[in-house]
Structure formats: C-alpha cells, structure tokens
Length: 119
Image (tube, rainbow, N blue to C red; front, side):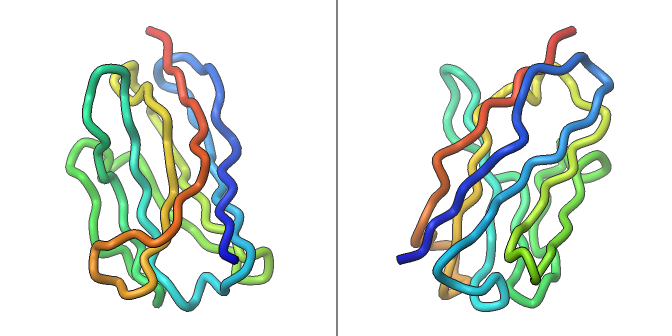
C-alpha cells in the first residue's frame, strides 16, 4: 500500500519561504510521477507542479514557476516543494499525489498540509 504524507505547512508572512515535504512509503519515487496541487477556500483544486518519475519537471503553473522548486531525496524517498517569495494568494491546502502511469491520472494522494500567507 502506497502512502504519501505531507508536512511543512504553516503560517508565514508574505515574502517568506516554506519547504513542503511529501514522504513516500510503499513504492519508490523512481517509479511514479508526482504532482503537487493546492486548493484555496472556495476555489477548485489547482495543479501546480508535476515531476516525472525520472526527476524531470514536466509542468509548472505560471504563477509559481519562478518561485517554487522541486527536489528529491531518493534515500529518504521524499520529494520537496520549496516555496519562495510567498504571496497571500498562495494560501491553500497543498497536496502531493502519485501518478503511476505518468498519464495525469493520480492513483494516491497525501492528506494535505495547510499553507497560510499573511500580508
């Protein structure tokens, strides 16, 4: 059974940074693509970054492209979302999700972590 556990969310001020972690158990990071999503109150879930199983970034939403970066620790089987220059509009619950077929269909999801950016 594959399990994703996010951590690292919190309350920060505009301009601050946070690093979210998505710790994976039950399957190697090398065997599935990872998507990061966020959902703000009253809004639909938004896909923000996708990492192919090879480690290559295949998608960035334009609003985060120059501020958010991805890294992976294959020993810890964990993917990180580094978020810099945070803005109030980044406030949302952030989720990581695994896509075994790398086809945009996500097979398993983390529980989410809240990020709140105050102005």
